Length: 175
Image (cartoon, rainbow, N blue to C red):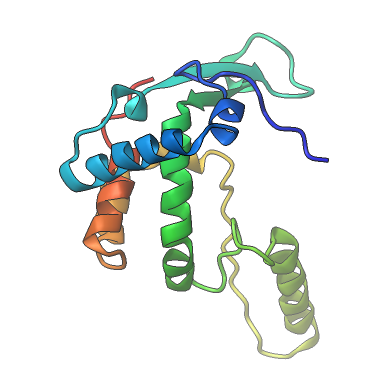
C-alpha cells in the first residue's frame, strides 16, 4: 500500500480531500482550469508556493549550500501540472536527443556510464581512435533555468493552448 502525502500545502487544502470529493468539486476545478486556459484568469493560489529549506542528509547544519529547497504548491497547481505533464511528455520526449537520459522512463545514468565504458575500452584497444567525452554536472541545473528561453523553445514543438498552460506554471510565480 502506498502512503498518501497528507500535509496541507500553500492553500491549506489536503490532496486527500480533493481525491475523495464529490463530482461537483471536480466540475468546479475543471471550470477554474478551463477559465485559466482560455482567458488567463486564475486563482492567486495557482502562482503561490511556500519555500521550505530542508537540511540535506549527511551534511552539517548551518551553511545554505547544505539545504535543499522544497516548494509546497497549491493542490490546484499540482492538478494543472499533472495535466500539463500528461499533455506534453511524449512530444517533449521525442524532441530530446537519445543521449539525454535524465527523467526518461527506461533510461538512466547507468546506461550512459556503461556506454562510456564501452567507448573507452574501444579507444584503449584500437589504433588511431580518439574519443572526446563531455560530462556535465547537472546537480544545480534547476538553480539557473531561464524560463523565458524554455518557453521560446517549447513554442516550436507544443500547440498554442498547451504552451499557454505551461506558461501559467512558469511565469510570475511567487514564493
